[in-house]
Image 1 (spheres, each protein chain N blue to C red):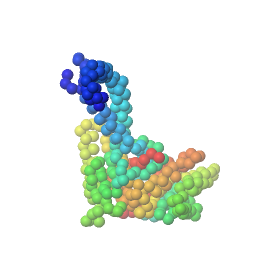
Image 2: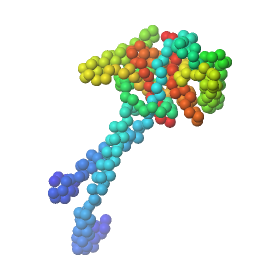
Image 3: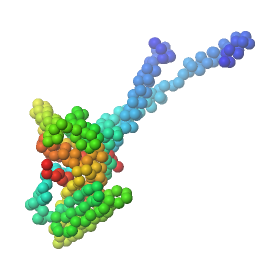
Length: 160
Length: 176
């Protein structure tokens, strides 16, 4: 048996160990860089030109639109309630306030005798808005401590 | 060092005893079996972790997905990556980006290379499904975008994907 110091008739484990150690080192280095990924499904974007995309359902249920800009988050309703604007604070956009406001709207619209709200929330953003702020808005709108708010998000595209 | 000192004193017996003792220690050796067990278990574990990640995406400063509480696991699909420097379709760069804008000589058709690449990918997947009698093209697009990508660029890509017959979009994010 050549090299490695193995005894007579024994398997020389040293080269095998070398390979194993190299493999383990490689995999440790690779797995250290693997981050846990998740997916946020979005509904098929619609080309909007000022009006709602699905007119038939609008008459039965209201829907909300959240507009994100570098300055503020605006919440607009399809049923005549005045738009609300949540201004950016020193810590960024007010996602906590957005969650509270959406819960308020949802509770009001789904109260007995009210027409209800669509589960899908339309999100539109300024063209320069960073993607992370859109994702944070989607997170704020998805659910709160009481449960689901708007699990379906519809990203609105401007007409091109 | 001690050997040298011993030689200098001429004590050959002491040297012999010491060397014999050292030789016996070496013969006893390290028991590699336990170490082999540990290494094998570690190797199997790491391979499993590596294999379980459905999409091996290398995140770096050029491509850092935003953090989110989105609950859905990653589903393998046609992948479009929007980094700070390029738009990549299934590991093939199709467009160059600088300061959040597409670098192109033809601004009117700035998304044309992306459109071509996505349509070709759809055609390939349909052809494969036809030949293998496998499931048809599902229209799912996995979008991995850098957290600083402007919304206008993201929606531009989604719009092109829609025209290329992708009907379901999944935004890939880092688990918060």
